[in-house]
Length: 97
Image (cartoon, rainbow, N blue to C red):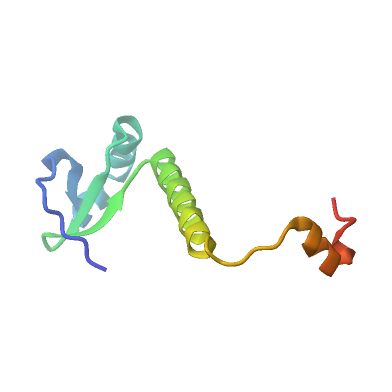
């Protein structure tokens, strides 16, 4: 999937693969301090984005939350049964705590 960047990127946050190889430690420190993404380009095309670990983790959590919401929405109108009726059908589960 290709994402087209339809806005101007800040030049200080855009690097070629070659530049990244030469300045890896410096770039990692920049991302950690500024919390801003760095776009990695190859042959003048965006190929990757380097983001802070905390930002990545928060994005992952947000994605999981959205997936959970979508899963609930998908089954919202499906028929349900009460817990009591479920346990009548599955008495072996009644003692699980």
